[in-house]
Length: 417
Ligand code: GLA
Image 1 (tube, rainbow, N blue to C red):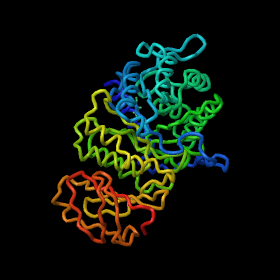
Image 2 (cartoon, helix red, strand yellow; image 1 turned 90 degrees about the horizontal axis):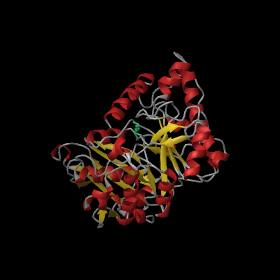
Image 3 (tube, rainbow, N blue to C red; image 1 turned 60 degrees about the horizontal axis):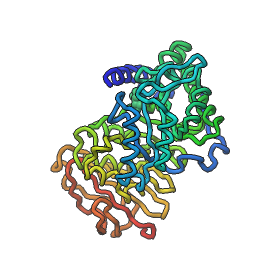
Image 4 (tube, rainbow, N blue to C red; image 1 turned 60 degrees about the vertical axis):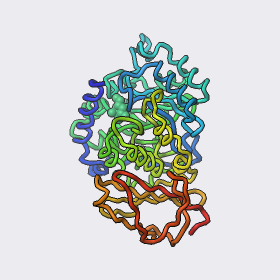
């Protein structure tokens, strides 16, 4: 886990050096791939944001076959499956050696990948795997460089339904080596690498969700859908700390036009239930990822999940916002002091409003008055408070008291103006 983390930090620093900021790097001249009409056809996978669980945020490099089986069992027994969680994703550190024919094999932690996939499928779930276009993954394990078609075939033979493809060593090993001082060419190499794997997956004939992981630099939302990416990371790595979660959340403002059925912005996997996040922070994190139509990939220790965490992760009304078939990501309409107000349009013509107190002090943001006018909503209007289940009336300029890092999440039904 230590090795993995330090490795990733180094690569991320490198990425940051290449591109000075999340939405920056417009200086290079490489034309970005664009989606054609056929690519905008109804999606074969990820029509709504993928839901499931991923091993990294809790197990890091220690994940084993047993952890994956146990997590699949828990997804069923906790009701997460019924709530919509489908994918059980193995992240980095499963890889072993390639054989004389170049075929990748799992390491000793995963004695039989096909049997593991069969087990997960037998639960009515799907399974995902992880690799990268470089020679090594972020944790220093075998990458897919030069073996893309072969690896895609292997994943399909094992029965994989999802691939997270993580750039990492491709930056120093290929981009910087092959095109030193030529940023445009480096970008072209990156596009080609993702394109190659997307085509290789397609050639297997198996529907496999493709998750692009390159930390959100070079604005992947502008080109990832054209390369067949179903989701793309918009940020660096998440951590189970409020400040980090809030930073990633804030970086999503303005990206809403890029998300839609089959192609989603990914502000990274959930930390709900991890670290020392308070109940309010867990609730706000989950609410906002749902508002963002973000992939909901839990990353906690499922066999030891506390009831209050289960309640958050399986909250049907909140999940319904995320999975709304319209697929419209929320916009941050305005901020006042340390309170942010986000609005999401829903397929029934209704709206969800999130009022988030991002500040560390309740007093500093009190009293906060909600402006329905700024949201384009004529009040008073009835709304359902999704966390309490109660109906309440929203009025323009009404005072709202929120504890530090807590959220008010309400849904206005479709018939309301
Ligand atoms: C990168 C990714 C993480 C995780 C690790 C695995 O840091 O951003 O989500 O997959 O690699 O090494």
